[in-house]
Image (cartoon, rainbow, N blue to C red):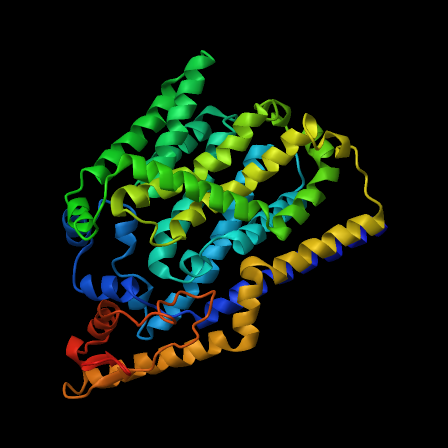
Length: 470
């Protein structure tokens, strides 16, 4: 009973840990591409817009549809719709994690246990992800990458358990085929992951001499989407803006270095390590209760260790191949999400036959369990993105950011009615660490100011950053 009360308290504190991320969404503002897409797509129809983007910018046929008539256009105040997106995406991420866990465990766990597992998954992701701001609080990046990851979690969940009555099973497969095509068209990262996933599954089915038709259908859907993306004329237009692209050796080498960098950083996370310790006493129970878990643990340890490195490499290679650099880390957010279950898979395998095997029978005392929980909660709040969010909210950076951005929006509204007015943007000297901001040590780039001016109906020449030479 004492341990039960301890677990309940722990769960309540985990739920409370999400509130700071929801609170942060109240300070979000549109920036950069948000305004560019909203201004560019004004007055265009869905087909006209998507075909234009495919011809002149990129082949992301699925995510491009979400750039037209986005949340900036839903109400007269663009902030209303924009600030609804972070909590919506956080909620969808949690639900997709729960769905995958529920399907993978085949309901061997109680609903409360599934929800707890999904909550831990979400919190670890929020703390570890390399770019929290672009992951959830910047609409353009979030719907391109985070929504793609949400759909991929659902896709994996539908793949995980194929039993049931024939008609619902067929409907689920058709839905999943559509998902495969949509996920591939979200961005280049998810395209690579989908091709790798379904190539491996097809080869595995062939090797096991099992029916290969469903696997071939999923691979075909992914290949069709990949071709539609790769053959888009707009890719050449975008590639022309970068030098030193399409260098195979350089791209592979830099991807390998980034795999070591990010994997090493995540493995040293106090939050991840603390929850790894908390996993040890429940490993035996999960092993006995979840169908197919024992078979999964037969994966060779070397393969389990290699998978996280391959994952990070797959999410960084397209950036180096197409642009010659890793200009942003929102692409690595995708790897971070799937690194977390791979970490626990490695812990489970090493508990079975490795250096952790002597600890597999550990049955913590109430004091030990409470200490491990306290360390896990402390790490969630005082390391990684956890401490950055608290510092921004409590230290005033988020509030200062909100005031400066609101001032700019009000200035542009007023200048739209007065063509002679000049707007001087106050620089963000100390932008928040957890919200998307492209200032601080760098000056706000002109194209970002011009897009914002066009969105509010002002002329580009009317806006300038204070202290910037005309």
